[in-house]
Image (cartoon, rainbow, N blue to C red; front, side, top):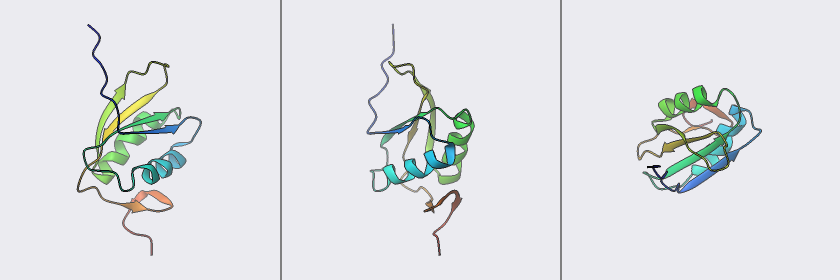
Length: 99
């Protein structure tokens, strides 16, 4: 029996984006979202399977891994954390506020 993938609260389409640009878009899209929100990220960058879990570890969000997609796109899931650490506006790999 096929297990249904839960419907995400937010979907970020990063098709064709390099991971740094994707993470900037992801950060903008989740800004203000409720903790616990399920987020699906469509990511074609070959580094995404490494970069997304690393970014989640850095920020404190929960990386849930790849999910099935009806259109056969590479989709990864994460759950937003209430106590996530912010990243700088133009530097998704650096925590803390930009001065």
